[in-house]
Image 1: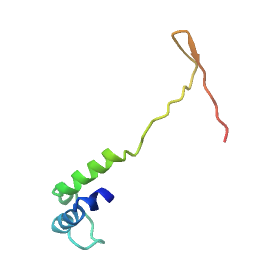
Image 2: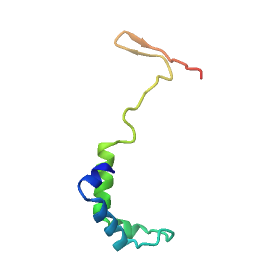
Image 3: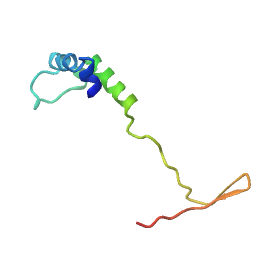
Length: 79
């Protein structure tokens, strides 16, 4: 959001939303109206690029595995 304010994109994004969707926030938004909001889509993609929802994915062995003479065992964590 800071980047949007810094580059004066927030106002343009809002105007695009009003132009295609309308000002009524309680009205349902259809998919065709959202497809026409090109600037909004670009802002969302850039936000996801800068701040991805999943930074790393942790993996866990469910069964013992042998990889080049190393034995990976299942580690059970109790909370």
